[in-house]
Amino acid sequence: MNTRIGGKFTFKGISGGEKKRLAFASEVLTNPSVLFCDEPTSGLDSFMAQNLIECLKTMASEGRTIICTIHQPSSQVFALFDNILFMADGRVAFMGTTREAKEFFSSLGYKICDNYLDFSHSPIMITNGTENKSEDTFDEQTDGNEDIVDRGHRAGVWRQMFTLFWRSYLILIRNPLLLKVRFMRSLVLALFLGAIYYKQFPISSDVENINAALFLVIQNTMFMNTLFCIQIFCMEAPIFLREYKNRLYGVFPYFVSTAFIQLPVITLTGIIFIAVIYYMVGFNPEPHVFFTCYFISAINKTMMGALAMFTPMVMPMMLFGGLFLNSGNMPGWLSWIQYLSFIHYGYESLVVNQWKDIDY
Image (cartoon, rainbow, N blue to C red):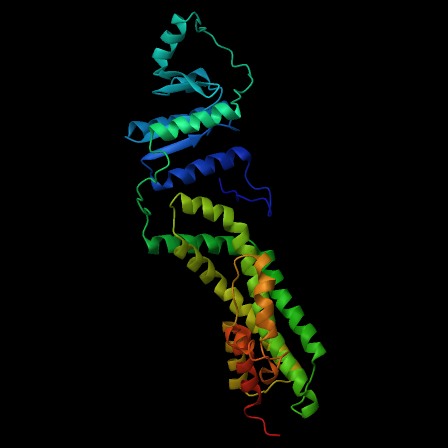
């Protein structure tokens, strides 16, 4: 079977039962010694539910501790459990083996049927007061609030990076439409800005226009790559957090592999944008100046943690970037902000690169 998983913001992908089995498989990748399963059979048919419990039974027989909650198990599934615990209104009704359960309830006058029909029944409702009391009792009698000993990651850092790199590569090549959109966006925006500032000459009347175009080169490079990175990390955040908490990999391998696989795309989109706008506007035509311009534009970009923080963090960087405010006219108590602006350094580098070989 070779089906793409899909997601909420992409396409339907695999079914709910397949997602349930995939989530279970992801949990056991690290070969945990203790496994907590909260209704792992929900959404599965009887055959797949029994297969999953049989898998848990095999893992338990190999020395692992498995704690599992389950509703309405079939008689075959019920027989696979070593020890069971029945809850009623948040209290323990019985705890022991399956054989002991039959004897216990029979002694109370509840004879177990030989042929039980699995009719649906109403779920047990736990009142808030009883639930809170149960939590307090658990905390008093156990060390449930204490952290489990950190066992670290099973795989080494390089193995994590290689695996995550390969996964990011597959995600990238399996979305050709997204790649085409990114390249077309760079081309269309370059043509649009190039048409606005078309054929500027290094004379006094066009100096401000050329400087504005240089500022837009920096700004466009930053915005395009930053917004795309925000989109990627926000979409992958739920998966990353779940897998990170399960200790499948660390933060550093994830961000390095994700950023590294995007580097060729960012480079190519930057080349397309610079190559088109550079000669349409009429920047300094010397080859070394062109490549210097591209290099400066490429290294002046940032990745923000969330789109909501993007505007308030970037707006001061833009205002003190060197185009809108002259450093000599800034209030003294605000002039220091320009040295915190990454746009300021990129824009200043482009302006020097553009005008240093031109005589008036």
